[in-house]
Image 1 (cartoon, helix red, strand yellow):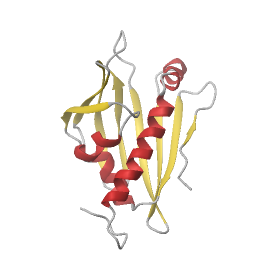
Image 2: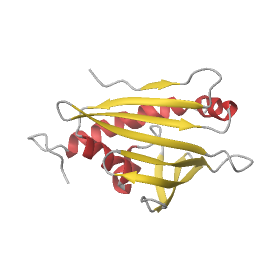
Image 3: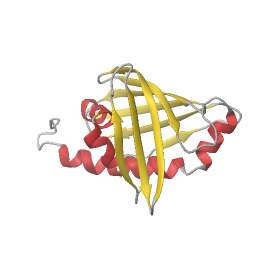
Image 4: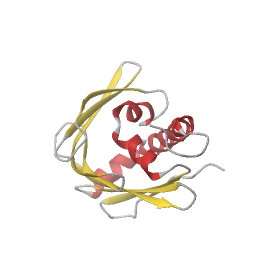
Amino acid sequence: MANKTTITAEPGKQELFITREFDFPRELVFKAHTDPDIYQQWVGPNGMTMTIEKWDYCEGGEYRFVHERDGHKYAFFGMCHEVKTPERIIGTFEFDGLPERGHVIMGKTTFEELPGNRTRLVHQSVFFSVADRDGMIQSGMERGVNDGYEKLDAILEKRREPNNATAA
């Protein structure tokens, strides 16, 4: 049975949590979140292509990528505040298509090692307002997260060596 993604957003709060288990080692799941060649293959909803315009994924570094479908482009960018291999990533995330700037999301993603070479990912996003959080949810975020993690499972399965060790 495939692993299920849980998105928790309590009414009236400015945060949401995404929890997902993976049948792969923590180092490999972490790498998929920090290596641009892997990242651009899985993030976002099905049917979109991604172009990474900037990727300096280290403490103090910046990133920017663009999703495209049917001629429509959607840009996202942010800064990395902490990248602690393979434990956690803390940084900002912002959509570049809103009428005004400043709808910054602070995110923390932790990677917990589970028995059997498995990983539990917990992502917490904190928004400036409940309206910002609810707008993100209403934008189709859940579909993008679920599609992305399904693609990531397939990518990691191809990278797994026969003895379940991580592939470089």
